[in-house]
Length: 399
Image 1 (cartoon, rainbow, N blue to C red):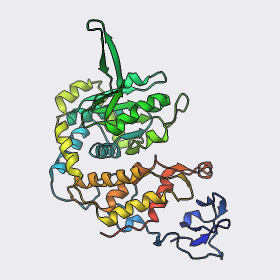
Image 2: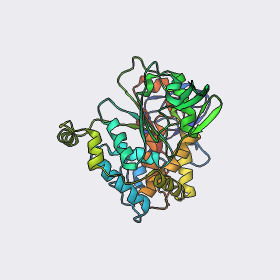
Image 3: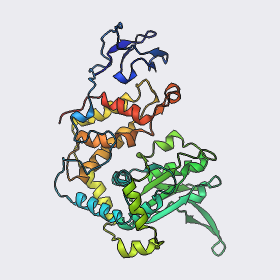
Image 4: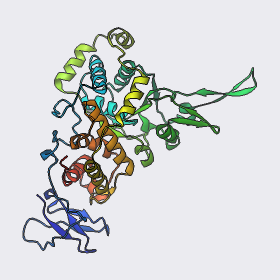
């Protein structure tokens, strides 16, 4: 149900908004003027379509299996397929990781979706929630190299990429690789370094190579950057530029564990046992870089129906017209939604994607790619809620 379609009093731009905007003020996407949204009483409303194809507000839960937008969980999904090799691999990875890392299903699933989609992950959480433990465990389970960079204010780009070092014996410069030459990289507190250090990651994350003194050095696939930032402390931090944020496939919000999960953490990790010994003795390596690369290549064959591609396109394009969003998502967001939906489908043994796959990853893929208007920020609105209202206005295709 919506409050109807009405025209902007300044430029006559037709607008259609959900009931939650009744009696509030919004910014017209055409003329940028602030207008008052009519109440539910008798108002002069001119019924005109906003788009060439009228968009009917419809809850997403009526079609997809999982009705919670952004709820990244495979446990409640009923649309599962065959017991494929990718599904078996996913189950083995999650089983081994759960032996050490308790809970945080969204973090585990989101990271694996990004890894098997050739993407990267930005994690926002308070300290002490086990991010380093998770990455080390994941690297051991996957059989991949693990590296960590602690970002600080004085970190230089060469500290990440490496630099030529003069060899006194040969009287020549020899390139010494930096810590970026790994497969799973934890970029801890990435927002504590200035922009010139962030820029060193742009080429690496997009093209999987490093260029130093005009010479390029390739990184061995798979390559996953897991960057973290603290949402609480703001002193001594630098906001990531939009170009850097857009390189991350997902932004995951990690909250505190539940009471039972925290109790399990206290019982399991209170004996100060060396993590290296636990990984060597209790955790099995169930995969290899070659197997992961083969799975990534296989996931690209998951079918995306034309109606589902149009559904993704409508969501992404609507973010650029929504009154409460100053900047919408880029085409890279649509590509991330499509590839993420393919990977989720493969994890469940299906060779086709469904709308529920898109719905599950919609918020992690879009939340860091949009900017709120000043009015929305002053009112204390959050990107997740705005995106949820936006997605619910897009009609879900019936495949």
